[in-house]
Image (cartoon, rainbow, N blue to C red; front, side):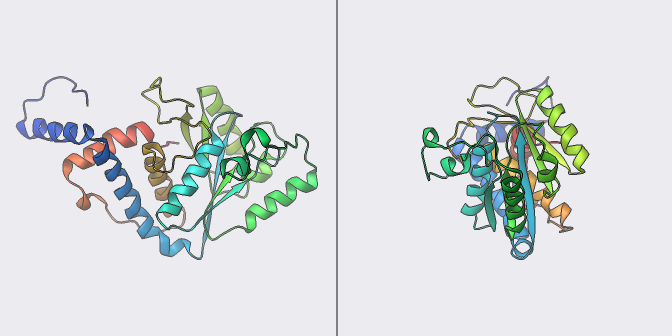
Length: 259
C-alpha cells in the first residue's frame, strides 16, 4: 500500500501499518474477500430460493466473457447460493467447453443459427431459475438479437479492454433499459490500467476463488439486493478497521465494477 504524503496522526499511521500487514499475507486477503461475499450470500439466499435475477455478461469477442461468467457461477455454487449458468452464445458452444464437456478445439461452431434457434435459446434462458442465472452472451455488439437477449436480464456486466469497448456496449445496453456495470478484462495478470477495476487471467480456465471474482460478485449481489428491495446489513462490525481499509480501498478499487 503506497502512502501519499506524510500523516502525523499516530492512529492513522498504525491503521496503515495494519492494512499493509494484511496485504502482505495473500491468504488473509482471500479470507477477507470470501468472508464478505459469504455474508452477502447468507443474507440474500432466502430471497433467491424462489425468485430469479438474470445477470448478463456482455462484451466483444475474446474479452473473457465465458471464463468470467462460469467463474461467477462456480463461486456462487461454492457458497451454496442458488445459481445457474446459461450459454446464450449458440454460435460457438463455449459453454460446453468451459464446463469440461468437450475440449475448446473440439467445438462445433454454428456461425449462422436460425432465428428459431435464437428465439428458443432466449426463451430457455428466461425459464431457468430460481437464483442468480448467469447468462453468457455472444460477442458481437451489432448482433441483431442482442436487444432481445438484453431485455430479459436484470443487470449487464460489460467486459472490455478499452473505453471504446465500454462505450459501444453501454450504448446498446442503455437502449434496452437495462442497468450496466463495467469491468476491464485482461487475459493475463499484468497490471496495465491501475485506475480501472479489472478482472485478470480470463484465459478459459474458471477461477471461482480469484480475488477479482469474489470482489466483483460482492458488488453484484449488492445490486441484486437493491433491485429486489432487500435490505442488507452493515458488514463492517464483522471486520476490523484495517480489514475494512483493505476491502474498500484496495479490493473494491481494483476489482469492483462501476456504472
